[in-house]
Picture 1: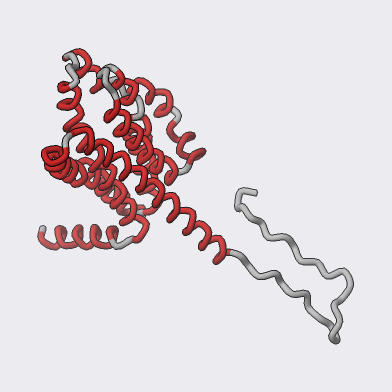
Picture 2: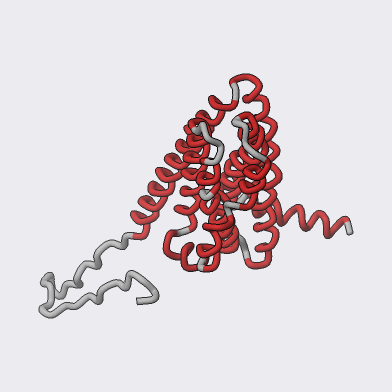
Length: 235
């Protein structure tokens, strides 16, 4: 049993040391921090706005309504938008939700903001799970996906509730919501910049130099033909 346990720890350590997967786990921890803070304290905030018990119950389930058609076609959505851009949308969704909560006076507007859970939780979960499947070795897919869920729903939530509660005591609910909106927007912007930079650098590395035509007796032979490079394997 001890050897199996050590083997599993070694596998987890190897997965975490994978650069792209470790970045994904860090992003999921950030998103889990926002999610944990929002899901823990939004109901306290709505009660301060004199929300009814009916409204508090609706906020728990309303977010799934707009998500159902997109989850039904989630594979097509992920393929069309891309994993990374859906995770960026999750950060932007939190930005809108936090900013909206800080300005609403009527608590019923919270239902409209809850519809953004389509991006902040549901499609984000699908994109993170499929991205972990792509990044991890096939023998460690289940472990990689479990690390994704632990990063979001356990580590991130713990950070969000602890730090969020402390900040609310210090600065109040509205200021913390506005600060979280700015922070989530900054995360989306930095993520977009790094993603585009990596794509640009990889594109430069993949550029192949043009083949020089062979010379015969110092002259380029007439009719020399170089076939075009196929850009896509599916082409």
